[in-house]
Length: 114
Image (tube, rainbow, N blue to C red; front, side):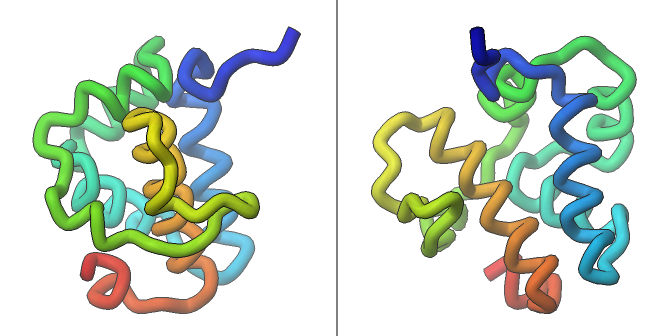
């Protein structure tokens, strides 16, 4: 049985996002910065989440200050238009994935943070 991305541990998924960026010459601090911008978590809170048992779904749904500018995140992730995703939590998953994709493709932090 396949585990839902919502039920997977944040500590398992986040390093994969960091690796995606690092393979293209970016650094973890940049992934942390766009994650903090999108979710409102501090760098310390992101680090604490990595050391906890929090699921990816809970990390995103409990974001302290989800950025209202997230609605400006558009484009395809895994063949799906981010802006057309109806499930609010899946939309958050794909929005963060899209930002990491943009980072890996060479966009500046200023461009990514819209």
